[in-house]
Image (tube, rainbow, N blue to C red; front, top):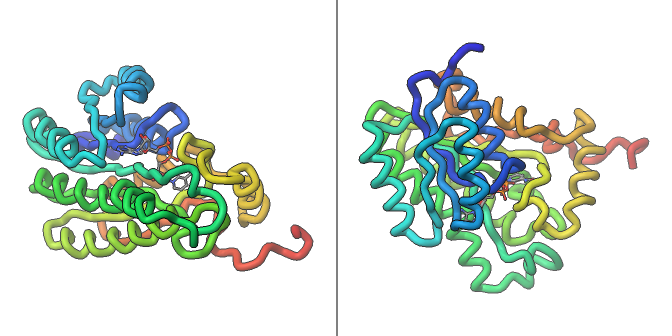
Length: 262
Ligand code: NAD
């Protein structure tokens, strides 16, 4: 296998278990020779993430809750101490109160709106700023988004609004860091059965509908998401920044399903 990531070091944030999108990406990047560091949110998830890290020989496995800025700073302090530079970052973090991932968007509470925005959107800006300081030779960062940022989707509610803001922040960060050779992009993934994905009201119906009506007539795999991350984080995508790259079996291009499929 060609080692597209040989000599590159990257931080992966957002592995919860072996179903996580970030885990699929970690496996692909590792297979292509990247040296990795992982973060995990809280000790309960740490118990799941540490054995996964061992599988890939990842030694830097750090606690980080992005709601606590001191914990984000501590993560980057350790990275600075252990590694001379950083080449890439994956931010695969999202959260909204499950009680508001159903019903009407109009009923979103102020508290949950703010918390969702901080964790699911602003944390990428805070991470990107700190990561860029450790990328003197340029680098590449990606975050994870979903097509309900562009269109109204039942139950996705405040998360759709946060993803819209996240996508806008990808463009602003790409403009800020581009002159330093740092690229910033997002992958807009089709539905995947993960811990976060299953928190959305009527998730099963959403998965089934998108699989049935996407041009490829199927969902996407962790390996496929890993392949797209490899493209965006490696030199293969050297001229690409500020993009929202859809990996969704083509679902986003469909305005109406074929009448025979209704
Ligand atoms: P997941 O549950 O495996 O991962 C979500 C991660 O967010 C977890 O590791 C969790 O610990 C982390 N997180 C939440 N709050 C945090 C906090 N305060 N501090 C640090 N970490 C925190 O689910 P996933 O589906 O792999 O989600 C990864 C990303 O992909 C999310 O941004 C999600 O919105 C996005 N996404 C998921 C799908 C899908 O269908 N699963 C589709 C498109 C986009």
